[in-house]
Amino acid sequence: GAVVSQHPSWVICKSGTSVKIECRSLDFQATTMFWYRQFPKQSLMLMATSNEGSKATYEQGVEKDKFLINHASLTLSTLTVTSAHPEDSSFYICSADTQARNTIYFGEGSWLTVV
Amino acid sequence: AQTVTQSQPEMSVQEAETVTLSCTYDTSESDYYLFWYKQPPSRQMILVIRQEAYKQQNATENRFSVNFQKAAKSFSLKISDSQLGDAAMYFCAYLINGQNFVFGPGTRLSVLP
Image 1 (tube, chains in turn purple, red):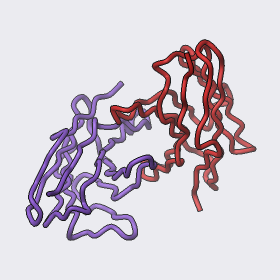
Image 2: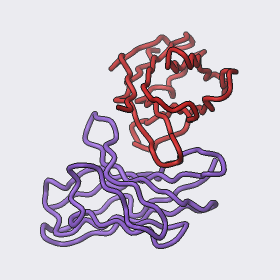
Image 3: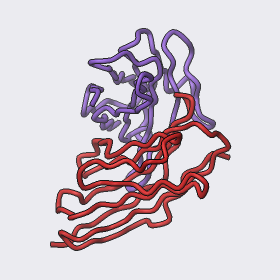
C-alpha cells in the first residue's frame, strides 16, 4: 500500500509555545489530507480536511487560529498547534487520499504532550 | 446525516475461531468506498480491507472477508482463524467523493489463547 509518514512521533513542548507536525505522502500525490485527534479509548475525531493549494476546511468546534493547517504541496501537509496548552495534549494522526485508488492511508501518528 | 454505526463496543474470540464485526452506515450517495481499519496498541491505523460500493462481490484479503449488503447499508467484517495479533480496535469507515471520510466508533477485539 501507499506510505504516509508523520513526524515527529513524540513531542513535548512548553505551555504557550507552538509545535508543528508534518504529514508526508512518500510515494503518491495526495490532493486531500485529513487531520484527526484521538482521545484515549475513543474513535478518531476529524479536525479538518486539507486540500492542496487551498484553505483547509475545519470541523465545527475546531479553532482555526489554534490549529493551523497548511497543504502547500501534493506531498506535504502540516498541522501547527499554536500557543499550546496542556488540554491540547493528545494523539494527532493524519491520513491522505490516493484518489487514483480512492483509498485512505494513515500516518503513524504523533503524541503531543504540553507541559 | 452521514453516519457509521458499530453496535459492538467490545468483542472477544477464541484463537483459531471465527468472529464477525458488524457495521452499518447511512448515506444517500450511491457511489462510495467502504473500509475496515485495524488499530493495534501502537496506534498505527492499518487498512484491513476495502470495498467499492458498485461491486456486488464481497472483498476478501486472506483471513479477512466482508459481507456487503448495499440495500441494507451493512458492511460486516469476518475474521477467520483468529490470531493473537488480530487483537486491536477495528474501525469501519466510508469515503465519498474523496472528501467525505466518516468513521465508526470502533469495536475492541480481544483474542483469547
